[in-house]
Length: 201
Image 1 (cartoon, rainbow, N blue to C red):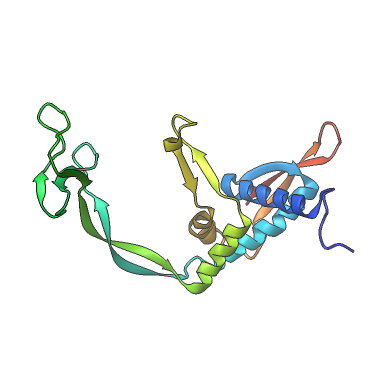
Image 2: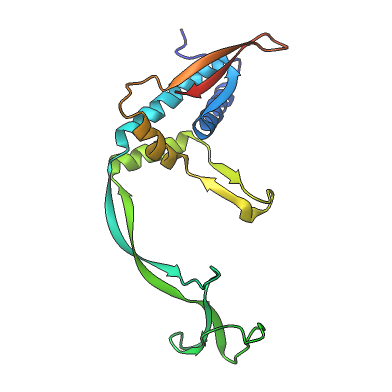
């Protein structure tokens, strides 16, 4: 006897379907699907949330020095012209003149000015790193579209592993399983398969 529902699909297609629905559920919080699919997705999502709740605090805070571009009052990067051969020799503190036209200096090169700042970052311990890789191997990458959809600059990648550790991990830390619920909607038009709303509790 099989330990899982075959869902009328081949092995590879079935795994892709479950992965995509698990990704959508963790990203959105609720999805509409059939009852048979929902029961298979619950197995995957519950194990991921349990893993995230277990490993949520398994990191150490480390101070590091990082380079950040210097910004002007308008939030734009500060650029200057340096000597092409000797990068430490500054030829001009700005790349534009008073009228806003670009300066051209012989043997000069435009560079962004960077400042060294001290930052605190979270460094995952080995078991949390292993959990993160497991989560990323199951969930698909998600890209959000912002203002002016279609433009590449308006897109942003969502880190679902961080969402699990930072949002769902603390939320379900005191709960022993049962992170999802199924609400029946009724039979689907066409094939009369039972449709349900699958959501996180």
